[in-house]
Image (cartoon, rainbow, N blue to C red; front, top):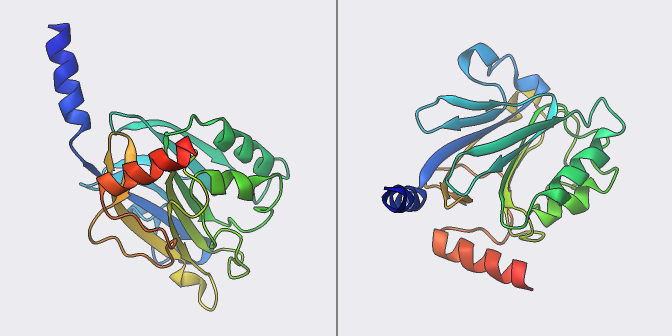
Length: 212
C-alpha cells in the first residue's frame, strides 16, 4: 500500500498546478480592495486564497508536491532590521526550492539594505529589483528558485509612477515538481531576459545554475 501511495504522490507531483501571484502598491488598494480579493498574496487557479501578503514583502516557499510549504512576511518598509532578516531567510532556503515573493503597500524603502538584493538575485531576481524606477508604493513579484542565480527567475514589476493606482500585478504561473514556470496568459510587465517557457527548460537552467 505504501508503495502504491508513493507512486500516486509521484504522479500527482508531475501534474502542473496553476497559481496566481498578486502584488499591490498602496495607491492601488482602492481600485483592487482586499474585500474583492485584491490583496497581495497567492491564489490557486480557482481564486481560492492560499496566502495573504502583509505590508512590504511576503516570501512563499513551495514544496516538491506543488503546495505552499511556508510563508513569511517582512516589513522592509517599517522595520530597519527586516531587509537583513529577509536576506537571511532567502539565503537559508535550500537550493532548488521554489520561491514566490510578492509585495503589498510599500516595498521600495530600505529594500537595498542588509544584503537583500544579493539574496533576491540568488533566487532569480533580475534588473527590476534594484532599478531606479522602483519608486515607493510600486508593485513587484519574483517567481524563482533558491540557488538559480541572478536573472534566471521571472520578475514582474509595475512602477507607482506616474499613477499609483496602476501599481497592481496578477501573474499566473504553473508549478511542476515544486518548481514554478510561467503559465500561458500571464501578463508580464517587466520580465528578466532569461524568461522560462517550459518545465524542461526550467529544470535544465536550474540544474545547470545549481551545479555551476
